[in-house]
Image (cartoon, rainbow, N blue to C red; front, side, top):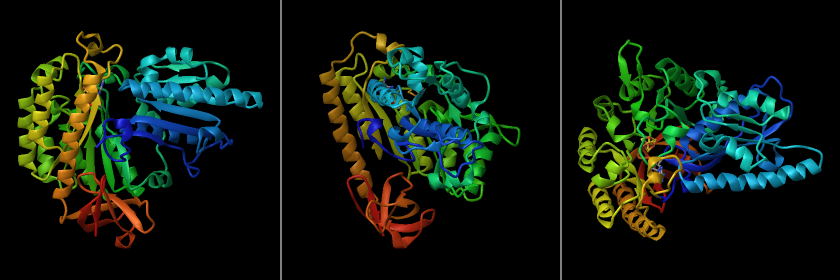
Length: 476
Ligand code: 5AD
Ligand code: SF4
C-alpha cells in the first residue's frame, strides 16, 4: 500500500520509483567501443519496458552497462510526468549531473546526458533551456531514434525529438538476446498498447503518449515466444489502456484483449499472464470470460475508479458512474469469485467536497480492495483540470489522503490475512533478503517468501500460506 507510485517498487504491477536498467555485457554489439551507459527510470512499468528496449538498442550500438552515473559516459533519464513530484525529481537529478559534467570537463573528459519519457515529451526544448547539461531530449514515441540522436549530439548538436512519427518504433528496436532476457528474470513486461484517447481531465497521458495504438497480434506473439524461449514463465501485458487493445486475430476476426490472452497462453513455457492498466469502460465480455475460463490468467485486476462521487467522475470525464463501476465489479466477481481488485484514487480533484470524498470511502467500503494506490490531485499544465477553479487546499488533500490510506491499508491487511492457510502456486522469482530464502508472487501479486529448499528460481511450486508480514506473505 502506498500513497504514490513512486514509493512502490513492484516488478509485475503498479509502478516503480526507479529501476536502473543497464544493458548486459552479453548482448551482441558490433562496436563494443568501451562507452558506458547508466539508465535511470522513473514512473510506470511502461517506462521500465521502454528503458529495456533503449538499453537493447544502445548495447547493439556498442555501449556497456555502468552501475552509476559516476562511471558512465552517457546517462539516460527516462522520466514520468504524471504528477508534479515526479517531474521535479528530474530537474534535481539534472542539477547533480550538471556538476558531474563540469568536473569531467575540467578533467578533460565528457559526459552525455539524454532525457527521455513523458517529461521529455511534455517539456521538449524547455528542458534543454532550463538544464543546459542535457544533450538529447527524446519523447516516448521517438526513442528508437536514440542511437542516431546521440551520434548527432556527439557532433555538438542539441537534439530535441518529440514528434509522433508514423514508423513503428517497436519494429525498429532490436530484440534482446535470450541471455539478456533471462537475466532480467523469469517474469517480463510486454507493451501491447500505448497511448490514450480517454482524456480524463486530470491526466497528461493523452498528451505525452499520444493517441491509442495497439500493436499487431503477430508482433506480440513473436515477442512473447522470444521471452518464453529465454525462460520467461510469466508475462505482464502493458498499456496505458491495456484493455482497449484490439487487433485482427490469426482467424481474421477482430480480437480484444481476452482473445489475445488465450493466444499467448498457447505458447509453451508461458504459464502465467497478467495485464495492466485497465479502464472500466473497456472491460468487455471476452476479457471477463477469460478471467473465468483461462487458468493462466492470474486472478488480479487493476481497475482504477479514481473517485466514488458521480459529480467528480463527471468533472474528471471518466464517462462512468460509481454505480456503473460497482455493477462491473459484480459481473467480474461472478465470473471469478477469487479475483482480487486493485485501484487508483485521486483525492482533492477541483471542487471535491467532503460529501464527494465520503462517496469515495463508501465505494471503497463496498468493493473491498486487495491493493490500492492513492494520490493527491496534482494540476498538470495543459490539462483541463488545471484550469478549473475551486482547487482544493493542500491541507484538505493531506487530511483526505490519510483517511483513504487508513481504510485501504485495513482492506489490504484483511485480504492478506484471509489467505492464511491457502494452498497456492508460486512462481519463484528471486533470492530473498535473508540467505536461504526465495521470493515469488502470489496469484494476487503479493510477494511471498519461502525457504529456498522448496525449489529454484523459475519453478512454480505449490505452497501453503502460513502467516503475513507487513508487506508480504510467508509460505511453506
Ligand atoms: N494528479 C494525481 N494523480 C494522478 N494520476 C494521474 N494524473 C494525476 C494527477 N494529475 C493518477 C491516477 C492514475 C494513476 C496512474 O495516476 O490515479 O490512474
Ligand atoms: Fe490518463 Fe484517463 Fe487515459 Fe488513464 S484513461 S491514461 S487516467 S486519460
